[in-house]
Structures are given as structure tokens and as C-alpha cells.
Image (cartoon, rainbow, N blue to C red; front, side, top):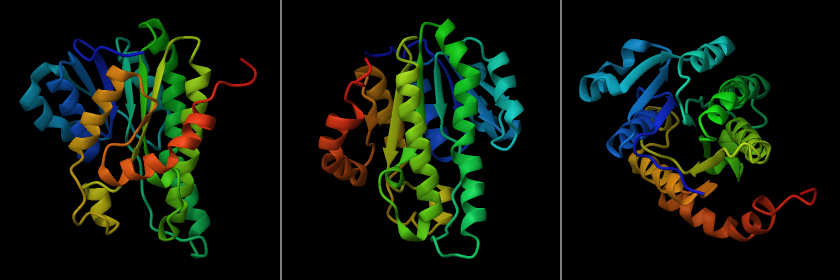
Amino acid sequence: MGVAIKNSVALVTGANRGIGRAISEGLLEAGAVKVYAAVRNLASVDELIERYGDRVIPIEFDLTRPETAVAAAEIATDVNLVVSNAGVLNVSDPLAEDAVKSLQFQMEGNVYPLIRLAQAFGPVLKANGGGTLAQMNSLASLKNFTPFTTYSASKAAAYSVTQGLREAWAEQGTQVISILAGPLKTDMSDSAGMGDGAPSPDLVADALIGALESGDFLVYPDAMAQGAGEAYASFADNVINAKSSEE
């Protein structure tokens, strides 16, 4: 199952910088007719608007305000691709004094918004032929990294939700993509001390476009992720991608 990018209409959360901006630009360059740039500060996408004109539509979306997901779905009724990219990152190991607080913060920033987006845009995608939801997960979805334990836990939860959406939406024909990336050169990775030498977020845009065309569920954009993906392949083939015994 593949999706035509040309003339598609996308909504990208966190479209103003980093991975979200790279995805937005990549989709527009590949022929998307419109990208709803879902951000907290509408003025933060002015540069995208200057470059792409009315093909970029700023729309309010705040991870901490559930009502903005509902409002976005009421506005962006022509969307056939939702990219859930915006998220948060805290450095906290499991024994840190703030570990529970850190995990709560990252669940609220990395997991609950995915569920809210899915609930808000599921009917929109169905009405527009099925469409696609792509979730920006992480290698931390697959493996815990001790200094980032609470982040890893939130990303593992997001990956689990992504798998659930894939099966829940199979009947309505919605493609679901899980992007499992290693550290990339973004403000977020820089602040966490992982940005030095990290590859460009443009790799995510390229990998997403490839998955839209191929219908792949698991996407590994960068070299580190691809190495992990090779090790994970057998489990993914035999468990993650296996047909449910109830089908």
C-alpha cells in the first residue's frame, strides 16, 4: 500500500523547526499541495510562508492543550497525511529525584498528544480515503538509554500506541508509519548533549517520503537507526508485523 505525495494535504506538528520543518519542506518539495503547520506560535512559520506562500497554512497546536487538536481537525478537513512530530525531551535516569515528574511531563508531551491527534483526525483521514498518520518515534522506543530513561519510557509508550493505531485503523484503510530515528541535529538534541556530529533531520523527510510510497510501517532514517533496524528485523517480522491471531 502506497500513498501518492503529489497533491496530498498534510498536517505537521512542530513544523517551525528541526525535524518538523525538514518534513514540511520535504513534503512541499515532493509535490504536496498544502501543509498545515501546526505550532504554538503562528508567527514561527513566517519563513516557511515566505518561501512557499499559501501552500503553508499556520494552525494552532499546543501539546499541553488538548482542545487545540480538536480545533485543528475542525479546520484542516482536507488533510490526508498527519505527521505527529512535536514532542519533548528531559534528561533523567530512573533513580533521579525528579524521575517521576520527568516521566509525567514526557508522557504528557510525547504520548497523550499522539492519542489526541489520532482521535481528532481519524474521522478526517477516513473521510478523505484513509490517508496516513506518521509518528515520530525514536531508537529510544526500542532500547532504554539510562541517562534518558524517562524519555525512553515515553517513546516506548508512543511506539506501542502507534502499533495499536495501525491495527485499529486497518479497516478504514489508514496507513500508519513509525519513524524510529537516532539522534539528529536539532535544537532538542543539542540541548541534551547529543547534537555534535548528528546527521541532518532532512534524512527523516526523505525516509518518510519513501515509506509513504512503499507502505512500510517501520522507518529507520539514519545510519544508527538502520543498524538497529537490522538487528530488530527478525522480531519485527515475526512479532510486530505478524497478523493478529484473532484475524
